[in-house]
Image 1 (tube, rainbow, N blue to C red):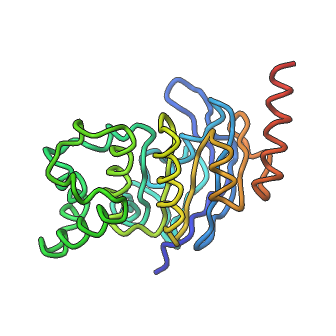
Image 2: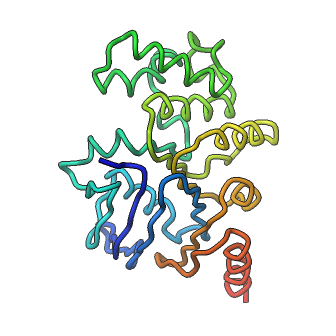
Image 3: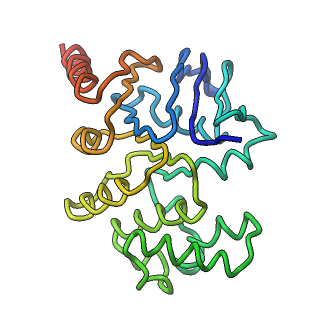
Length: 236
């Protein structure tokens, strides 16, 4: 069973207050693709990402991770394949130590402790933070907390990595380190960002959302041109 691709088919999503955040979204990200999700605030980017692992479910339409439809019943299986990094890393870091934060996912997969330790060590090494494993996350810088949040996802060995504004509030050094780290991930990436340079560096393909609809799906360079056109129309 392959989990390495993700497919949206006619996805609509409305919030309880009636706001329709996604309006017929359809696309496929295949194994190993890196796809940037672009758009102005309120375009539906975060709502789209939350559909990828069942934190939100379509009002109509379907999301598939490989050959598994994302439903309440399959959510736990899907979340082993789809690793999500939220915009605010503090939403993901709540254990007494960094080690425990990174170990949380593997332990909930009921892996043997020796395998948990191996995964935690490898994930912290990947983000260059082995030396902070005994610290609490609140003792770290914003860039370090972001890296620990990514390590907590990498420790679960996901097939698809989903990131919401990963470079937000990072200084240039932390941002560059993040780009280098993500460049080593060889499976599928969906990356929602306002950082257009980061999108160009990491993602050959981009999807542009506008008011819940896909209005462009092409090379990142071409989609960014369309994005600027949308911004100009908004200003007029």
